[in-house]
Image (cartoon, rainbow, N blue to C red; front, side, top):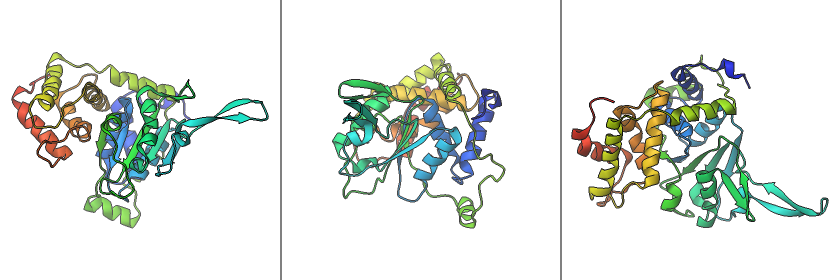
Length: 317
């Protein structure tokens, strides 16, 4: 890896360099990559819900490579056990003692592919790791590498052989979104085999210490009283309007706050604005809120929320 001195001091310059490098392989999906980057620096995890073949795995692999993180992948199946994920203690005849065989979860970057194909018991093996950064095996806690980042994927239209994620599992993901089809120009470049940005560097190597420092920068982004008022108006609306089956939990509210801060940092600012909150709300709320009357989408959730609280929107930060 390169030394810390090679990292641009301006966060926005660094952000754009990272996005350029990702987009060189994932053509035309810059905003998807930006949301993933915001989730990463917020300290959360991402759930990608989309049909097969639109680039979910490509995004995960490319993101890990650009960030210089060791990449691990678990292909979830219905016969998988929790020990297949976190590991197991086995008796070694050589040492005449029990030895820990670590599972694939012991990696800085984990792709949990088709997570909804695993049994609920196996899905729950990720809960402790995603929330607390460690796993417990036979009563002993084992820390995971830091940073630790999970991208989970699932096909929302697949029913056969799947086990829907319970709300407790969904809530561990800071945000959820799809990748979608590429636009006409991007698809033409894909079909022609052309990169989105031929001049983009192959990777932007960051040391773990540099990454953790950026995560700390995201946590310290300032929230003015006006922004906190706006945040609380959004949170209160989800709980009290009667439009949703249930509102944002405290964990969901903290996720919205963390993503707002992280998005602001990616813009090169040390303070958040209303537009930062508006930008991340669909992805943070998509998997947490369900309309009472039925049809739910990230865009519709955001439209309803902000149309209702717009009159209370602060004019300044």
